[in-house]
Image (tube, rainbow, N blue to C red; front, side, top):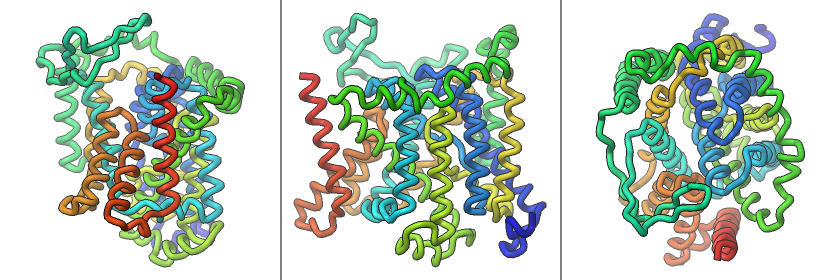
Amino acid sequence: MESFFKLKENGTSVSQEILGGLTTFFAMSYIIFVNPAMLSQSGIPWGAVFLATIIASVVSTLAMGFIANVPYALAPGMGLNAFFVYTVVFGLGFTWQEALAMVLLCGIINVLITVTKIRKQIIVAIPDFLQNAISGGIGIFIAYIGIKNAGLLSFTLDPGTYLALDSGTIIGSSAAVPALVNFTTPGVLLSLVGLFLTIILVVKRVKGAILIGIAVTTLLGLPFGVVDLSQLGQSTSISQAFAELGSVFGVALGREGIGSLFSDPSRIITVLMTIFAFSLSDTFDTLGTFIGTGRRSGIFSDEDLRTMENSSGFASKLDKALFGDSIGTIIGAIIGTSNTTTYVESAAGIEAGARTGLHNVVVAVLFLLSILVTPIAGIVPAQATAPALIVVGVMMMGSFKEIDWDNFADAVPAFFASAFMALSYSISQGIAAGFIFYCVIKIVRRETKDLHPILVGASVLFLLNYILMAYLSA
């Protein structure tokens, strides 16, 4: 163990790594409940997502520990799972099988661009303030989803301002007016109690605050009448969950996945842009986590960053970590979940003293043991997971502090990149808006020399996609 993980060389010990692993697990374990609640909305069986979340987290976290020997745990990413459901499936009309195929291709592409300089060039192409705007915008998006799932909003539409489809779906216009609901229903009241409880626990720096918030809110759901224990025996069992997983495992590689994805030529541009959006979000989410926590703790040195920027292959520890993250996405897609990414909650374990991949072994074992709570997890209501979404979203909005809002040329692209994510219910639309406005401002100011060809090319592709969508809907 000492020779493999190089504990002494990294200034750590077995006890430190175990403590760090425990801390990281309890900081990120909310994903075990939140990810199934979100992805099952796309049609993937709940039990399959539950197990896929755990298994993908176990395998990818171990891969990161063994490949890069760094204390970063992985799991299906928040924001990326929302993009999967609300943009790709609900918004663009792809099936969940096709969406998993896109995630798989995103992982393969990320592996290819990681072993070359392409991923690094993409990172360099987009200015720091826009990267921070994208990260913060995803936070707004996640928090907004949590607010909606909590049932805190109602929308008013006047006659003539909406379209009723034959399927029963109502398409409202921009005349829809949002408002807070009256706090009279048990579900809404439970969500509020859970939200205040979770915020208090996080403010008090209680370890595992978000997971505790989910658990306590679920228990409070009993007197509120939201949780019915009589359904406990009817919820998903471990055997049923594995059976459901069997119907999802590998579907991304099959006829309903990749086989269907490129069958319609009219969708190819949309498919490619969606995969690009997946890859972009995954890349910045991961790199932001590595740089934001790795430099401060010394896990990644300045030399690692310079080597990463100026070399190809796996010349630095950061290169190996990026490769491990990419492998995680492929693993997750094959098993049956959205993009698996490096968790910023790993910073809690690093703060507790973890410095090596032994930390990842501890986290993986704890995730594996979580399979035993399958029958109980099935009764966790949306009102218990909604506060977790809101709190995680607020945490992600910390990236906004790195943006110079007094500089209008930066503020405009940053605003549209972040605000459009929530307002259009789409991460990719926010990225597109940010890119396009940034290019327009640079052209108007005659600063085209500052525009990277990759960013210009992406903006052109986004514009072509809008033109194509307008043509097809005409």
